[in-house]
Length: 405
Image (tube, rainbow, N blue to C red; front, side):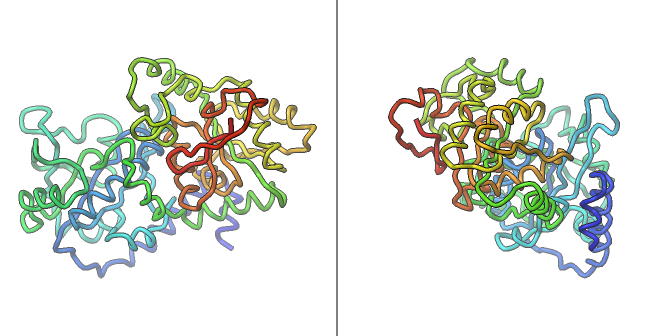
């Protein structure tokens, strides 16, 4: 009943209630056992959700290799430029369940850790920050700027000293690297390794992609997605689309495409392969022209006999254009009116086929979830540039199914 009421409320109120309920549950978690093997804490301070999720998978693999408990950080979200506050921290379990992650490795939310364990294992006066090299004097300057300062301030963390770990150590999830970390910084003298950024590679390494199966949407997100589908999408196949066409994204495409070859951009390994087995990044992959988008959608709708097209976009969802184009096929075009991106991702993951942006890590999140569920994905302007009249054939792309030629 409570969840049904929350779905009807404005997003900020619903998130606040969810946060309050989670906080109440956490307050009862007082009898926690200290992990003698130590903890890893970090700020997910690079980029927005898609980038943070990419690095989370690498961090999860790295922490498991160290055999320390992973402290699940909140997700960092940003408002409009110049707005206040400059960034906010959304508790990890607002969007994802903790229990599935615990099946892979020991985890604890940062809220529970700071309230119940930090006073014992990471007390004020003994809080060390770790960085590859000092930025100024003997300081890692881990609280300088946004979101670094607001993130640590959210938990009232000030660093008493810093540690430069330097060459010879990295975030590779290997037994050899883990042994070096544990020999140099044993849990007995360094119970908490606190990093100013995620201890994971970006973009996500190929071997860590399967870890996405442990990221399971919270019931709060899952119910909103299911309710939207039940209300707006009748029985029959539906096509999910993710479009990146905001001004900031256009600038990314203009400023970074074509500068260098054999260099990935954000999520591009998902469709080009980690060793460029399937080509190079192109402008059309990053920011596909409207005519190409319509052509690709029309082809996919006809092939799968879709009844509904669901669109998630950061700017223009092209609802009017797509509706007019698909009118002869009696296909409805819909979007999630509240524009809650995590619910949109959950809906995209449930579609019968998905077209995402090859470069976008936000697109990649839905693509990975679908890959775990053995669902088909394709990407704008990938294997889609030749005439539809030409012979059709299929080609695999890093575990995804490409559009037909």
